[in-house]
Length: 162
Image (cartoon, rainbow, N blue to C red; front, side, top):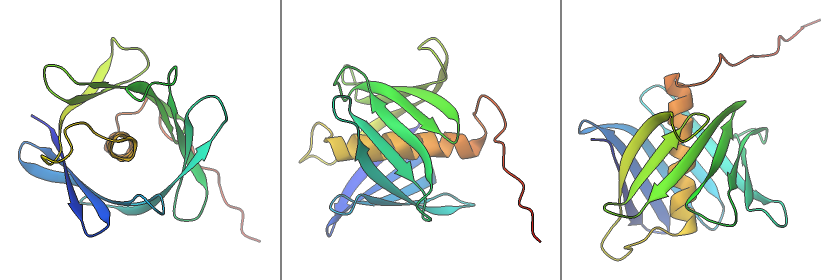
C-alpha cells in the first residue's frame, strides 16, 4: 500500500511518499515561506505556493524560476476535496477521514481513480492542517505528473535562437 508520512524537523515539515516500502518522493516544506523542496529519484525541484482569489480558496503553484506551473482549487470552501491543475493536466482530489486517513487522486471525475495513499501523521497532529494537505496534495500530483499519469503529453514551446 502507498503511504505518505509526515515529520516535523526544526521549523520545516518533512514528508515522504512510499510505494511498497520504497521511498519515491521526499518533500521538505517551510510553512512560513511557502516553499517546498520536492525530490524524486530522477528530479529535484523547488515549488512556491501563493494564495490567489477572494471567495474561492485558490493557490498558485510556481517553479523555482517564478513561472506558474499549476494551481490548487478547493471546492465549496472545503479543504477535503477540489482540483489540481499541473502543467495543463487536471486532477481531482479527495481526503477521506474514515475509516482511515487517505488521499485519493482522480483523473477527471470521481469514477477514474488514479492513485490512492494512506496519510500518516505524527501522534501530536491527529488531523492534517491546511499546510499538511496542500503539501501532500501538490506533492503527490506532481509525482503523478512526472510518472506519466497525465491525460495528454505536455507541449513545450520551441525556442528560436538568433
